[in-house]
Length: 199
Image 1: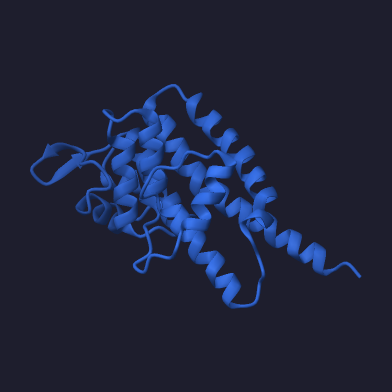
Image 2: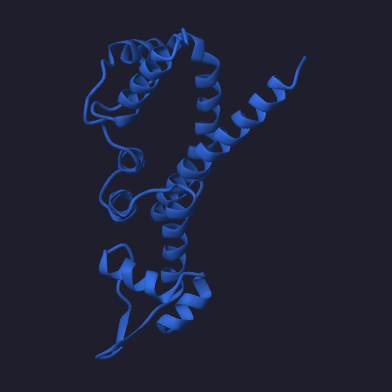
């Protein structure tokens, strides 16, 4: 299909497609002439993946590039590809908070987290912000949240591992990560409204 047909099939504007091609997020099409290329269903799929990361995940192009590199790296073991997706979505804060308390909590939960993973730093940063505003929260207060997140993670990883190809598995983990984070946030907002409505 030509780029105009790719645009119609994917719902992504021609201008955005050209931008994604320039940024290396979308593989080039097959050259059909010196000024034209043809595209296939793989391009439609990749565009839908990119749009989900932009529209739902709110990820900047640099982060999308990093996470798609994990999708495309056939040489990495699946667990490492999943980790690259997690690490590609976020980064360690510029000013690193003290993560000792978070690491102690993770060890107590027996969660094996790779050194340098951004999430412990982000969690420490968020706990610090809550405490700054008078929330006397401890990490053990979040054990039920962690248990729920772990159950959801088992579901996500199970979906991903059941995919027929490695690429599909990593894509599933990527979309699941971005979308389930939003699902958790929306359910929490519903719960806040329900609890605040109680007499």
